[in-house]
Amino acid sequence: MLVSLLSTLSTCMLGVLATPANHNRVYLADDSSTGDATLPQNLTLTALVGKNGVSALECWALTPELISSTSTGTVGALSYPHLGATGNSSWAMFTQLTNAGLHTAPAPQYVMIMTGRGELSFPSSDPNDDTLSGNYTLEAGDILIAQDTSDVSEKGHNSVWQPGTSVLQMPFVSGIAPEHVVLHDGGCERPHM
Image (cartoon, rainbow, N blue to C red; front, side, top):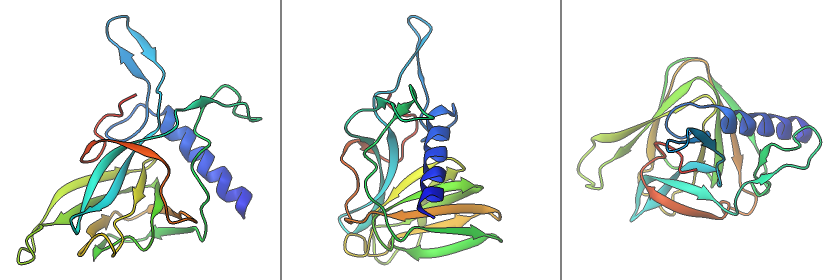
């Protein structure tokens, strides 16, 4: 079971690093002055956090920097060997359009979108305003760090999942996310590699 989970994680991570796609996927940046692709220095991920009792997004660069893998099967690939210990991981598939309603993260965790897509939205900081805003789309290959737990977010966030979406939830054993630097508020639009 653990070997299968680690294999899934490494496949997802390699896919995220190699896919030149949209908002929070990791890809090689093009140095327009030379036309050469430059290698990313850090793995960047969108994090769902609690700020002043309200759920919000941040763009994080995980530290330390990426390294060149020396592991069999991935020799020479970009690698981030500091993901940390995870436990009680689970897989879920949404078989129909699912509006999860307002909720907090059950524990600080990685949420990996394996297939499909979902959309996050957030309540207003005004307790009398039920409007949801700030839509953020997650797609297959995206990795989210969710840590807007009930101790840091009063209402949480809303998530709407398309039919056929599958996610892998991997709580941090320590309850603490990997070391990181906050690049900016809001989800990662384009990784800063």
